[in-house]
Length: 349
Image (tube, rainbow, N blue to C red; front, side):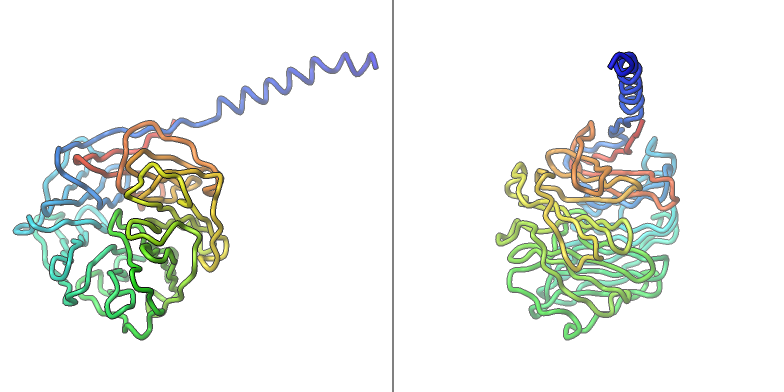
């Protein structure tokens, strides 16, 4: 017994040391604001690296920085003042495709190959009931676009030439739709790609489902999720995948932004089945992205990060955002965009 007592202080010291080291290694997350502009809403953002980033939004606005956000160049599309560019996908500081969302002909696609000095309209929606929601690219050539249902089925376009031309996936190849089910043009991230062939898109409204393709959008399967649904303002607003199997879905009710109810779900089988994360308790969130080893999410009431695959979340110091983009250079440069022209970079210390 005496020997045991003599070792107790040493054991306690060891525990204190381990706890101190653990605390000292805990990282801090904050947003560094690099752009603001009143009355400008930016829902599109595409990061290349820590220096180069594109953003897009209302009034036909397109912005570009090549110096890490110190200065921004106005690369807006001429004559597009009436368009709301809700998604942008860039390949480098010269080449980008931007998408406007809107009813009928207001849904359009433009491409630049000279850093936004000039733009070419590459596609305009021809469906009266159509409404573009998001675009995503697997590589510089192959991409996919999702729009609201046409004739009762989710509308999908694909490109194999870098966005210069787009072709429709025949509606009969798409799963049956549900009346009142659609996608949200909230952040350009309810549609996400992974690897060389995989993509997922989330829906909302009457149903909150995930549609999956493993062949670059040629065929799709649909899968139920436990994310809140049933009203026009509810559903999945964003998806992010760590690999071909593990993914996180976020959403909620944009009319009840502070309601933390059925807003986060995870999958471990590539989107076939989804489990609600009850302990997450996140408010409505419009975006989630994966920046290894973290999932990062944001919405009108704030932003959070998760280091355990989306099970628990910790707040990030700073303001609110609509969308997030992770750089393509492997350095995990994370940029965010939001209302009042806000653009920020994530700082991890």
